[in-house]
Length: 333
Image 1 (spheres, rainbow, N blue to C red):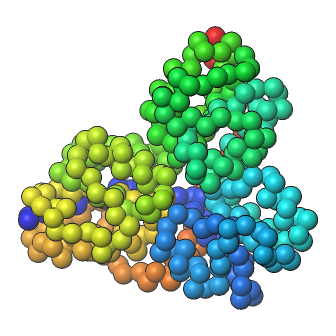
Image 2: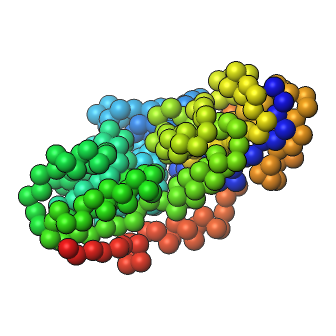
């Protein structure tokens, strides 16, 4: 095995929404020995385990924690959850990603204006479950083109939204197949800009390497999207940590591409790259291109790592708290 080069995606790792959620978790832990998270705060087992060690317990529902502090995960929750929390005197810390909040608001607005809502995404994903709640339970989830064949519309006005981590080409392929199926179709581009950039970079890197390694939780929707995109171009391996990487994965690979999902901390990415370098002493360089050395960051520092983000993220957050007209492409057929 002679690895000449490792191409690390610049967009790999924590996104704005994840950093924000971890900052809120860190703030909540100050002065509190115990708080709760309604479901895993993010989809990365290492980060979740680190938070558990620091005092954040993951719970499936609010029934057992009246009067306590509870974090709403970055994927959001249905409005019924907030109502239940208020009735049980639970203090909510809302770590919902602002991009997800925008989709929730648009779903609710469409319903108020008499539209049938379609959500392109993964039905069992917590983000989609939350959006369904904001749509009043009457929305329909579309996971693939095949679902359109069985779609029975009871409304001549349809609004279509995407899960924020959805594959962009897949989303607009479904949108194009909706044209002509209803009198009025409103299409919202609700895919997170960071997810889009991450997908585009993964596609580009996978076209110029021998093997792709995608790092992230196996239950991470955005990581799985990256795997699907890369596999169209090159052999691709989905791993959660450095220990999952084997020499066989990189057999006869001269150039290796590395990217990671939005919930993957830098220390895991760097450990994976370090493990690759251990496999081959002749490795020449790592290109991203600003990684010149691999720094070991302890898993317990995952939250502190998120704290380094300041002003640029704030302006991005403010930009998505209000739905913008520019984010909507409207077609009437």
